[in-house]
Length: 79
Image 1 (cartoon, rainbow, N blue to C red):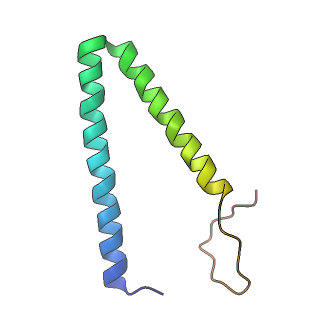
Image 2 (cartoon, rainbow, N blue to C red):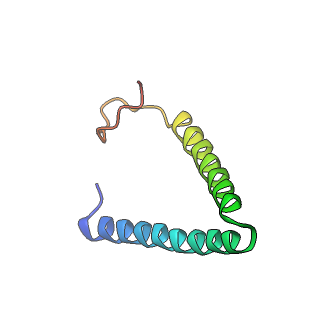
């Protein structure tokens, strides 16, 4: 188990990383849209989404094996 102050710090860090990524990608897509048009920005956005989907698929597929007696998080990976 992790103490609540450490858990809160990690969650805060992850949230800040997510928000920073949203800002950076948002500005990048705005630059693409202003330079090449909305269609190009949507295509770049779709490519980023596809890359993220592949990363998530690989991460779920390579989940560590379950340890007997270990606490579960409530996520059912065997569907």
